[in-house]
Length: 100
Image (tube, rainbow, N blue to C red; front, side, top):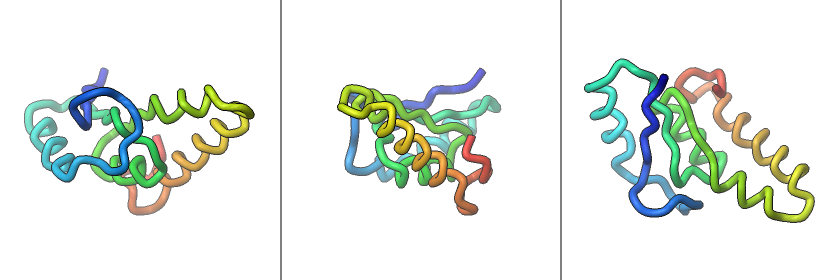
């Protein structure tokens, strides 16, 4: 199992930025559990995913993928977006460097 950490309060969906206290919040949760932590809610860009990957064990992207599924040429666009997310998380500065 894992802990699903909701990064922001409110409704799901794209955000311009991640909360400034996200690292602190993840640290507080790590202090009370040994389970892996996966962060979701509001992660909508490869840059967001890379930032969260440095802090958490998993990154969950939902609404940003669903929005792309609703567009024309969805398959191509979703594939490119997921590749971009994965590439951003595989950079050497990410937590595990594995992109997973």
